[in-house]
Every structure is written in C-alpha cells, then in structure tokens.
Image: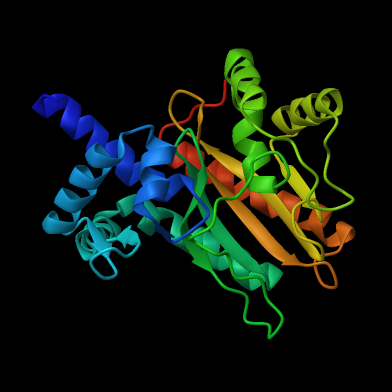
Length: 254
C-alpha cells in the first residue's frame, strides 16, 4: 500500500467515527465497516493511536476519538468567525422562544451540531452531539434534503432505510418527496414528533453566495410548550434571521 492510499485509508477509518452511532469501535468493527483486512485495519488504527488521533482502552480494547482531534476541534472553534456572526441570532431566538436553538451543518453524509443555546426551562431539549441525526424526519434534516438536486436525492433514498421512528414519521416515499418540495418552496421545515415522541422542531436554512444551503438553524422544544400554533408564530422571525445571515455571507435573492 503506497503512502497516498495509506493516507486515504487512514481518513476513511477516522470518518467511521463520524458515521456510526457509537462512541467507540472494536478492531473487528473497523475492519468490517471500512472493508479493510483485519491486519490492515490493525496497522492503521495502531498508527492513529500513536499519533494521538485515536485512543484505545487497553491493549486489545475498543478505539475512540483521541485527544489530538479534540484539540483541533477546540482550535477551529476559536477561529470560527461564522459562529461569531450567527451566535447573536441564536441568542435572540432562544430569548424570544424560550426554547433550545441549534446551528447545524451537513457534510454530505450526516447532520452535525455546530453550536447551540439551551433552553433555560427545566424541561428542555439537549441535542446529543455524538449521535447521527436522520435527515428525512427532522426539521433540520429536511432543509438539507430539500436543497439537493434530483440525482442527489435519489441517491440518498436509494441508500437510506426509511423507517418509522414514531407514528408521525413520513415513510411513504412519494409523500415524502412532495413534502420536501413544499419545504423547498416555503424555506422552512417542521418536525412534528416525527423523530422523537414529545419533541417538535422547526428549521430554516442559511444560503451561501451560490444559493446553496450552507447551514441550518433549528428550534427544538417539547410539545407541551412548542405547540403547532407557536411554531407558526416562530416561523416569521426564524426565516427573517436566516435571510439576514444569508445576505451577510453573500447571498443575493434575485
């Protein structure tokens, strides 16, 4: 295996920890998920441990994200001026709605949380940064799906198991596609207990200078407070703020 291929394989192993819903993986899991031979997976994992990008619990224990990657995340967070731009808007939405507000991004495979402002209520929604959030049954996920091209959307559905998380989850493919067309037209998406029972989510996307969804802002709350009527009221401010942020990063609505 030449150096370039080894480097690619090493990044593929690291990306496994972004894709799975677990914090740690056995060597056998790494080999199976990456398609590598056990000996190759062992060599790459051992090298990543030596470099500090992975850590291992014991000589034959499971692997998890190492301190060096955590350090990089800290450095990038300090340099992330976009977060500085968006945070005041997140705070305004948190204060006006009383609910948890999140800034979310999408790397082509999964949705991940960039920033959040947690509700001050005793009963609040706290996003789990370590879990993989499905796209088709969450407000933030629908925003990214609605922005996809037809081939991208077809590829997504082809490789995704559309399963029911709650009685409200839309699992009919034709109905889901029509639903996403409405999201694209309205610029806002709702999750009415489609992923988690007792939780609602409203989301709107931030557009870049090419008109593509750059990131997404979502508001999450328990159904006892975040009623359907309140979600409609929130929509106006949420869309206004995402529109203002979009303009600040170069989007021009023709």
